[in-house]
Image 1 (cartoon, helix red, strand yellow):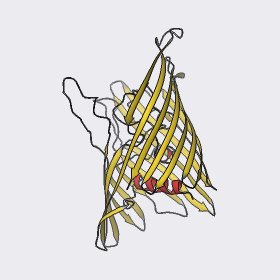
Image 2 (image 1 turned 90 degrees about the vertical axis):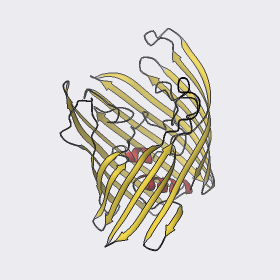
Image 3 (image 1 turned 45 degrees about the vertical axis):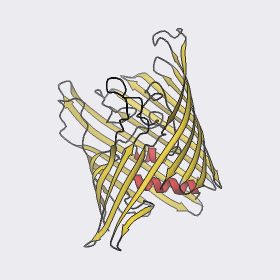
Image 4 (image 1 turned 180 degrees about the vertical axis):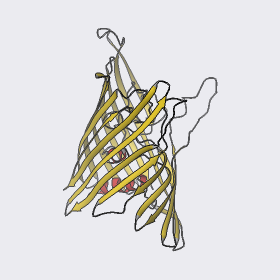
Length: 383
């Protein structure tokens, strides 16, 4: 298993509700521990964007603009704190993490005046109870649907796509990785989730989650249900991870009831420095970017997407090829196709410092065609 794979699996485990993965221990008395972890990434980016001047006239010509930025990449910068103790045969844990953007210096000017408006985004704040029978997580954490799709992305520590269609070129937050171009984002949400212990490589997670509303006056008779079945194992020099996840929810208001559901899955194989990653999803009544957190008022909206990636690692170097695609249909008519092709180079300086060079070509067809080329050069620091 190469250094990058170990790093990604460690980060994945940390983000996926493992509360003891931090690199710096703040307190340890033999029974209880407190630790912290941190990620900072900064990229210089240059994008060249072309869009049709008139969405209704394919012959209207292109409007073009170039934009240079200093910004964060796919993952926001964050600091996390982990707590663990043993009490009466139970392992009690907790995690809180606070995520921030760097790009807040020019998005709130005008009537509000100068200055920064750093928003602290609390994406994780939960407790865990572990025993021989498995784990219960209570609190706020990432959802289960599309969770592994995003955490196995080879570009997780990179930059990803930035299109004008989603307002990302000038956006004051993160780039999008492959969100909207291969998978949806599993927004953090209040939940009660049970995970089985490791069963010869298999693990099942089932979550009851706070539902999303289709309108301010909608009613939700039942919570949102999400689940995932995963299999992880190492066969000599071959590493394997496979998973299947799903979501289901209903929301009803005066306009009617919307039943939303989705199914996702994927597989990742590691062998002899090579890694192959493939994932996909299909959904109804969900958003193409943010799942149920992107309100869809009609179950006639259907989305499907896939992500294909390959990488090769040797020494301190890792090279990645990636292609992701998402299509949205409303009442049987395709209304959006969004894809992103990327090439990335990661150079591991040491356990805490990684250099990144990346190129993304994003194409959008939603009646107003867009092509966007982005070059990103960055530094990632982890503790």
